[in-house]
Amino acid sequence: MIPVISVVGYSNSGKTTLMVKLIREFKQRGFRIATVKHHHRDVDMDIPGKDTWKHAEAGADTVVLACPGKVGIIEKSSRELSLDEIASRISGVDLIITEGYKKENKPKIEVFRSGVHLKLITPPGELLAIAGDTDLPGTPVFGLDDARGLVDFLVEKLSLTIGAHV
Image 1: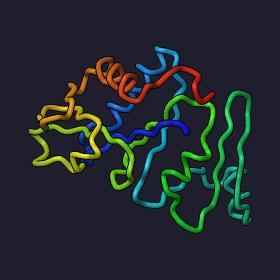
Image 2: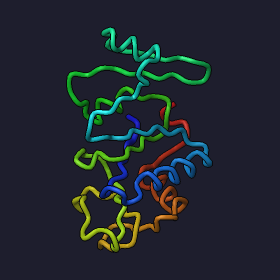
Image 3: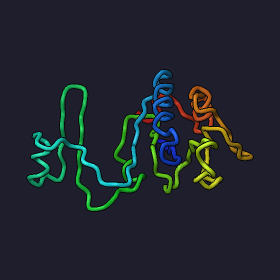
């Protein structure tokens, strides 16, 4: 099973910024990374009027767009899939990093800035670490710009190795 961690936090806390830094740091080290972004509303991932959109509008349950170097799959679902269901469809990577999924039972890194937020949203037992400027006894805290230190921690804590799941 590919390890999954979730980057969580309040809206506009810096989750995406941290994700980008983590992805870049992992990639510099040779890791293969998948990401999953959770959105609480229905969003359209296809462009109205384009061929793949027309396929879906005509009733296709799954639409695949394939081109040199990329494959995109849009699949209709009668319900929201769990993170475990989504992760089970991902292969060929060393780590899955999600943005959101604060209610899923996965290890979490919470992005927290005391000047913006009053309290953590993650129960302490689910926290791997905090990226921000607050202390929680027994929980490692990394600065928002310390992607290198956070990746060092994650590699050790999760026993990550390059190519273990490829």
